[in-house]
Length: 280
Image (cartoon, rainbow, N blue to C red):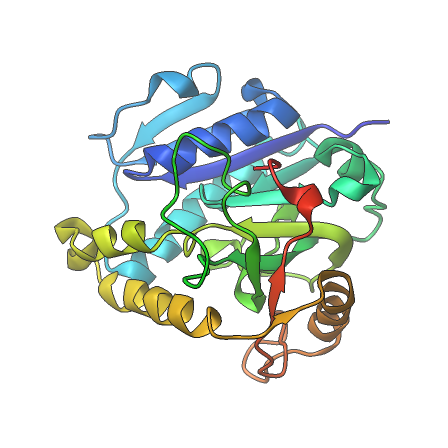
């Protein structure tokens, strides 16, 4: 029996990725099952979001860390209210897409509906940071599919997030963990993050006074450094290394945070198989 699934997010001045987020999850779950909160009553609900459950809310104040905590507390509370109407709640940022390996021939709701939720608090896809490879990839053409233009992912524990909630528990900041329970990283399930997918976009954000005032400069500079360093890594085999990474992240934990995954410092760049092209 197919589970009832909703997706929830919060956004400020992120119309490009929100549009993609609405298109992607709306096509899979139905726009009526998407919940989009706009961070600030000065925000306007775009036309493409009509049909979703949308609401501009008072802006969450503070620097990056403080605002992240405020936003996730708000989102967690809204998600908890949705349980009863839904069996699962997907929580992601607008530049994150939970993807089932196309080789299975299953949609995301079909795949998630087959998972055994007995005793489970959450499910995670393996974290894949989609990186612009400076050696061979140009600036994104925003009229085309993202994975038509980007073929390289960095296996990142940061994006192996507790994206799928099965019970009404609070998320940690950025959906990176739940306040209760451990990870369950599911085979053939991936979370693609596109925050590092376009150097010009990141450079433009570095010039944004609003982001600078909230302490985003350090984070964005780290993104630029990551893009440059990852582009120099050797390219590994997808099937072999996604399996290894899933095992490593399941077994190992940082000593300072038992319910976050670790990769023992390994830096792994993979090329996406062609079957993923056009998925997002």
